[in-house]
Length: 182
Image (cartoon, rainbow, N blue to C red):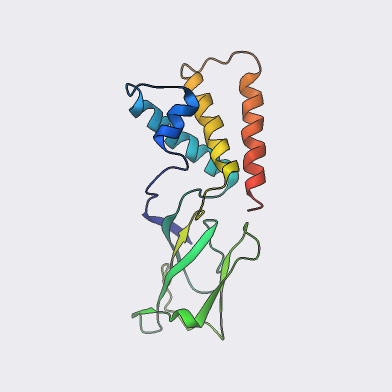
């Protein structure tokens, strides 16, 4: 089972203007640097929380319909499910034949309405395309990104002063842990 990114997020959880306001930067001399920090902060929060913050399209390939857990969360929608039938011909499964189950935002899976069709034996026998990410990024996630952004900007030399860094790291961790309930 593997996933591949089809369409990257079109934006960050916060805008460059919001990031600059948070950092109290009024000029555009560091826009490229701040954007790279924003990218790193977003990735950091996504890694800690195990969630994608902004909508993006993924495709999950698997050997068959035996395991239908979706590996990227939270799930907004299923775009389509394709599979190679017993004759190794690519088919599109009618959306009326399956449903998305996500009673817990920490887990999501698809299940058949009746039963799954037979598939050809290959590593990409089933291809599930879906949109992962929040439709509206929770303020808690935005705050975690702001905190990480602030740390990256303030500690660009890698030098740690006092315990502020550890306190911020703990704060970011608490915010990310809280996201898992969304």
